[in-house]
Image (cartoon, rainbow, N blue to C red; front, side, top):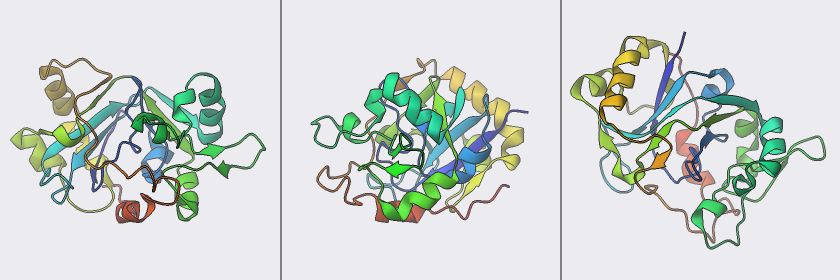
Length: 221
């Protein structure tokens, strides 16, 4: 049975999810979702009342259909050949390159954290997610998050930490149907990330402290 996972994003910085280069991935943060999501499931990130650009509550920041589930090791192996842009390049002038989410190097067997958007305090939580979720069928709105219809806003939205899944079952088909009515091309970025990290701080735990606000305490309701 397909599931719809929803959660509120306090700081959407373009790293988790990472929507660049025609592919949306979730490989860091949200370990409780990454551990259990399967191919065919959907993940929707909802806006926060206290988002950096203003009140985005009741809005959709992104939605992705899970097209593939890889272990963190497999993701690293495939990124080297298929998605080198997912490996962070902190000296690049391109934000997309700096925000690469393949930040764990398994070439020596045990994972070694590359310099990127996360630091040492994030390792345990990142690796506890076990999997990398990959989508080619996604819609990313970022700071231009779009309002949900009233019924979906009522049923899906919450401003608490953690995620919802089981309780979203009655809204699954309605959510997909609503996305279809938007008549948007999947795999596109329709808005820039809401919170852009200072590139000088990336790699020195620039985003780690604010990401702690998104600690799991996840509930499967």
